Image 1 (cartoon, rainbow, N blue to C red):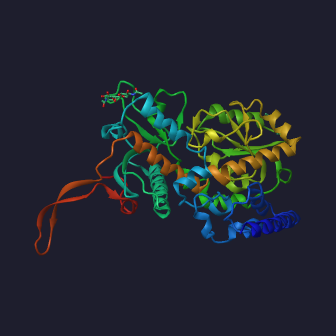
Image 2: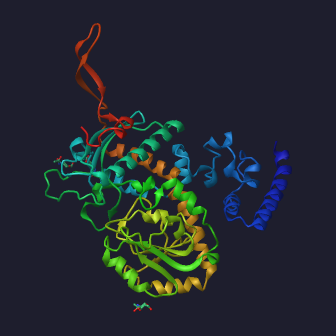
Image 3: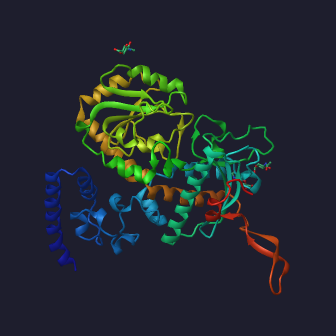
Length: 455
Ligand SMILES: *[C@@H]1O[C@H](CO)[C@@H](O)[C@H](O)[C@H]1NC(C)=O
Ligand SMILES: *[C@@H]1O[C@H](CO)[C@@H](O)[C@H](O)[C@H]1NC(C)=O
Ligand SMILES: *[C@@H]1O[C@H](CO)[C@@H](O)[C@H](O)[C@H]1NC(C)=O
């Protein structure tokens, strides 16, 4: 066995070298990436030789890859897999769960309070709120509060994301705890003031700010744009389209691009417009959705060397779509954070974006700097691809995050009763009015097809 391996590995090394040179010759960037991902890792015993020399993304998963002690996350194969095991989730995305840890610590240590049913009430919200139950890896809706059309699509997306994460767990043999919680699908949670009758109100939200006193009451979840956004389209489809525009930094349009509405955050977006007006290195325009002027498809932004992100009313879900490009991301100093923003690295070896001031006063200087240094710019773009589109913003990572969140929450919250006693009228033989125990709420599938206000 060992002798055989000693003979085989030098040959495999040769195959990898040949494969790499072939890929370089053909210069197919996507394929090259697959080889690059595979190269630095020492050869685990159970990964087949052909995993290293072929395009692994095109083959069905090897039966060896599910063994937790030898498994290695491989983006080309695993990125769209919502069914990773708990161990695989930890191994593939070790630094993804920071927000969950923060919240668990906040409730178990700082507040020292076990979350109670009343704490997840959404009576303080007029709209855009859900109360949910997870039991036996299945999602049930306990309450859906006045979700007008704008919020309805968010609700459907978020519930679908949770449902996908739950089905993935079942595939992975990962049994999740029974939990009950609430989510606000608005841009901001607007948790009631300190003097509200219940100071322990806590809710899951798409984003939060570090400066807010109520930050510990917010559990940050992946936003609904990981499913769909009107401007960006279906998330998985958008990723494929963006990758279709892959090119080296020097081969992209040598400009910084931005499209959007200004009214959502004039203090930042107007500055961007003025700082870039009439500049040869910028293609920045305000979109008029009604007239359809300056609209640009999400994937076409990827044709530019730099893609600029701006916050909106709050966090703006656009960043993840920009990170689908293999361009250099430019992000201003952010106030709002989402579940993966801590992975943005502004400097050093791991730098994966260019950080600029909120008023974009240093934008020109920085764009010029990197236009003059394409190798440095390429390294940032490559790091961004590795950290986000191949990891943090994948379907695999999103599903992992939800499941780790369900577990984290369960550690500091009460365990709800999944069932309730109800009186039902049974027809037919032996029928009549009977007391029956049944699961609370409405199942996810039924809710999707019903009116969105419930009960
Ligand atoms: C939390 O509260 C419990 C009693 O409710 C107490 O025994 C424990 O010491 C407290 N822990 C901290 C870290 O304050
Ligand atoms: C809020 O939590 C604290 C700490 O557990 C508890 O003493 C207090 O009674 C709670 N308040 C309400 C209104 O539930
Ligand atoms: C930009 O160029 C246009 C057309 O040349 C000119 O009218 C405008 O004043 C310029 N704006 C700025 C801010 O320089």
